[in-house]
Length: 123
Length: 108
Image (tube, rainbow over all chains, first blue to last red; front, side, top):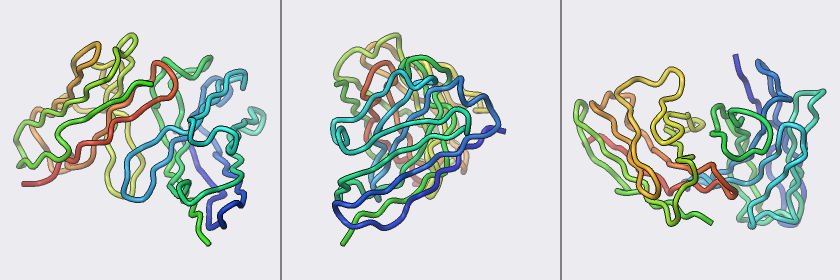
C-alpha cells in the first residue's frame, strides 16, 4: 500500500525556520518525482515545489523561491522541505504528493497524497 | 503561467442528480495534462481523472472527464451521498502546476 506520511509541522514565529519530512513506503521511492502542495485554512490548493526522482530537476513557486528548499534522500525513502524566513502567509497544511512516474516532475499527475501537516506562522 | 478558472463556485444539487463542473484555462493545456481531484473536509485530495478523461484506479464510472485545449469538464452522472465535496482541476504539464479555485458540490 502506497503511504506518504508528513511530519515536522508546528507553530513558528515569523522569520523562523522549520523542516518538514515526508516518509514514503509501499512503492519504489527512487522511481517517482514528488511534489509539495499547500492549503491555507479555508482556501484552495497551491503547488509549492517539485523534485524529480533523481533530484536533478527542482522547481519552486515564485511565492517561496529563495526561502524554501526541497530535497530528497532516496536511500531513506524520504522527502524534505526546509522552510526559512517564514511569513504569516506560509500558514497552511502542507501535503507531499507523488507524481505517477519519475524523470522530470511535469507531465505526470499527482496520484497519491499524504494526509498533510499543519504549519502555523504566528507571533 | 496558466490560470485555471472553475465554475460554478458552488453547485447545489440533490442525490441522484447530474453534476457538471467546468474548468477553463487561460492558455492551452499541453497534451491535455489536466487532472481532477476530490477533497472532503479534513482529508487530502484524491485523484479522480487524469489526462483530461482517464479515470484513476478505483474511481466509479459515474465520474467522467472531457474537453481539450482550454475547456474541460468533470461530470458526475448521478450524485451519491459520498460525492458531496470540493473538486479541483489542475494542469500538470508545466510549472507551476496550477490548480483551479475549486467547485463545492453541496446538498440542495
